[in-house]
Length: 173
Image (cartoon, rainbow, N blue to C red; front, side):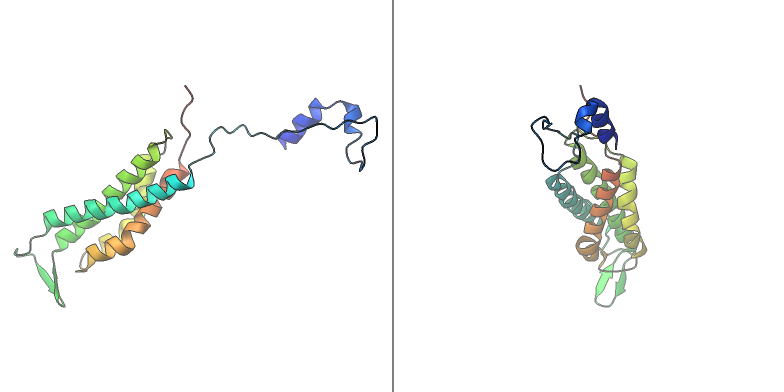
């Protein structure tokens, strides 16, 4: 709308009277109009978004498994058995926290690598909301496997949505 109004102001009245005629006569001229946008940053590329998702999955998986391994006590008194699988609820909680932290950090870091700025806390909110089922699955013996296959992609997508929704372009020098 603003572009059309600025073209209206820039054109002399004789040229505006010719708008809408089908065939230009000998006394009319053609005006090349170049439409430009004032936005200098087109946004993140598809490859960068794919990198944020892949990084979020990798961060959730690796940091979650490291946290799970650190807190797992296979011979401790808190060990529980469900079916054929033994698990430690504290280790499952550590996996959920670690996967949330790992996904948040990598999604944010990869998003910032092009110089743009996004909110860390909204990125953390996106991965945190996606982590709620992992926290609720504390009593599930196969939580790390379910977290890697189902939880990590959802966490990465939540973090991506959080980062991209608050993304600002790199400030001009």
